[in-house]
Image (cartoon, rainbow, N blue to C red; front, side, top):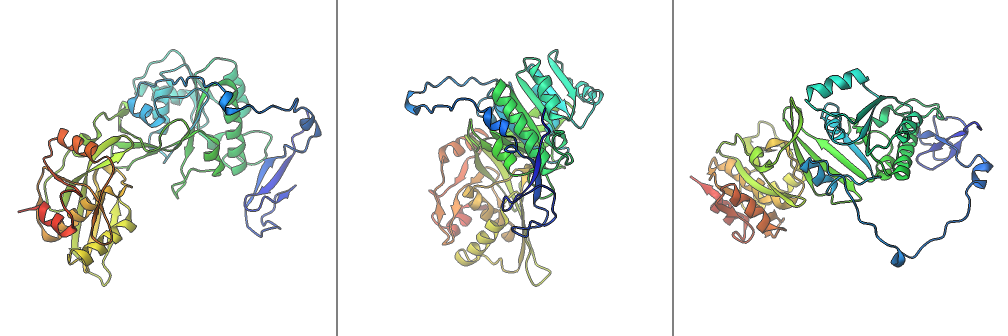
Length: 433
């Protein structure tokens, strides 16, 4: 077998060098040359291409029915688009200790699966498996970091699912760089991708998250896989939110809600009820129905205002976009005449949920006004609507679905763009003495 040739490629300008250079001679960027396999070095590789493939007309192709493997975990199936697609490659990313390995170990126990561990020994996995109370007679464990050995072992048996924990520990001996480097992560992920497409086995890859909150390794790793899922949650909250940032076989708006417990990751069937558990009626609190994919979820918006102790007031938010908070505060000052110029404002979304849609604007404004005026918003009130810079309330999508979920949980007073035309009228309507 011919020796593999490696080259170093600049990630900024694609300059190629036979050896590592700290500074790229072409674009002058530092530390951008990454070791890669030179697939064009061997002339025999070109000769082995075989006959030229013929393209086919899309109109003449027959579509095979998409058969999915049900995990029997509704929250995960929802995020995946209905279940696991055979031959797909799924990247699960999240902070250390958030529950990635626990979740996939529980899922692997439901199939004939191979669990590849590059971080733990077989004995450690057995201890965790027993602690979770799981039982399986068709779950295989392999403690290995060489990706070629991993794919060879996976081909010797007929598996439905292969879990790789984690991609940062996988290596190929054809590269000299250390495990976790850009070259190793990219090459090992590529080989796992080819294994999945060649065999039809679904592959789950666990990816660690850097301190900046991005998946460790090159961005091409996310382009290579079929689905990118993120598992998020606060350290002091038991809830874990599973969402898809990319999904070739389903929507990306859906979320799954789990709770970390002694029995592992358990799905939350009624997220709205769980997010509102322990809520107290006090100034600065209101409930908003937000839409996550096809599901309406009720959560609490909390606001706290205090006269500033410094010259510049502080504006902070947790679970809500801080830039949007600044716009809403400026709109309230200008259009509603609420004195917030010298107020420190703090916003929190209870339960650790992160709100990205503008439908929560009205609830945030009402929570701030309730805190400033020290007035309690009635317990059975919800507010939803987008607030424009002119103070107008804009329509939002799927209002009926949001209100149906609120009615199911006993809410009776609804503040929507249809019931309040201006911000000042909305504030006067919502506050109760």
